[in-house]
Length: 250
Ligand SMILES: [Zn+2]
Ligand SMILES: [Zn+2]
Image (cartoon, rainbow, N blue to C red; front, side):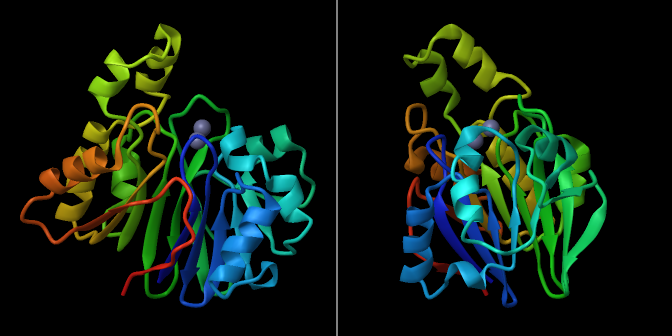
């Protein structure tokens, strides 16, 4: 499995996953030129994309959607609500919590996420050999989501903020309240607890995503998750805000 993080955070989100030769993009919160550059640098083209998945309609996830979709001919999947909001005819809606085959040998389950955006989802993505979870932009993780992703080989999970940095930082009170709420964003602390629970049940690879540039630092997010998984067989990395380096997972 290959993961190519192109953008991760409040300024834009777009991640390429190459699973047994099936290449999918999650979110299009980057410009078409930026996406093209990242693809080309790593031996991919717009034509090598087999499917596009969209988590939700906040602009950091869809601001490049229109421009990128002019270049990408692959099937597009999102929730019913996101399709209604974005009014994109070619999108195929995914039913919540239903395992759906979207390509030959590739199944996706849309996981409703607790976030202040209607129709927001994460994904469980399965091939015959591997299972990957993708959950960003969520204020809490219900047990049903944890259970759905137990046993995944790899999980991309939000580690948005350090609670102290946020509480004592310069954001206005209403924004702090929004981020800390159950439909805001995951803190390092909550993320780490989840990472430990996943690791206990066999997940080995973790990618910490959607870090706040204002209220977090990569080393804090990483240290928190590493501490929570001490003694476990977990490999944890932080996705960069902007990056074009392929990461290979066995
Ligand atoms: Zn976001
Ligand atoms: Zn969001």
